[in-house]
Length: 187
Image (cartoon, rainbow, N blue to C red):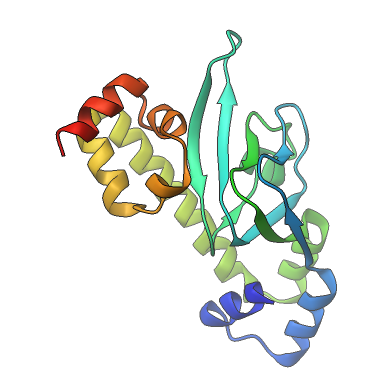
């Protein structure tokens, strides 16, 4: 399993722990446009993307969709407020490509943390990553121009531009598709 290899790069996993992980990890292959989580649903799984792309987005009461994050290979994803706090999700998690995921249930994750304290390191690492991304996102939307946000996305996640529709990219950047087209034509 690819997730095992990923975890071994960050944690010293014994053969016993690897065997336990193999028993509790669920691997699945999902089609493009598959909705993993909808607003109002409880998400009790932590996902790891082996291959593919997931868009996290929300929809306003008027029906406008806004992309919050793109999640790509070798990243963990879940509906944070639901997985951590047990609250209903506020967001959609949707595959934008055929996607291969590994997942672990909340219950198994909690048991793993109790039996193997070394997984706290991973938990802290993932939470730190989420907090850093949130802070960067807020800072970008408050203090950067549309062009700066575009250039940052191009620098940090260049593959997004080959994998995601311009409408989703514009939504993520907080601009219209027309503005995105103008920015791209200047480059």
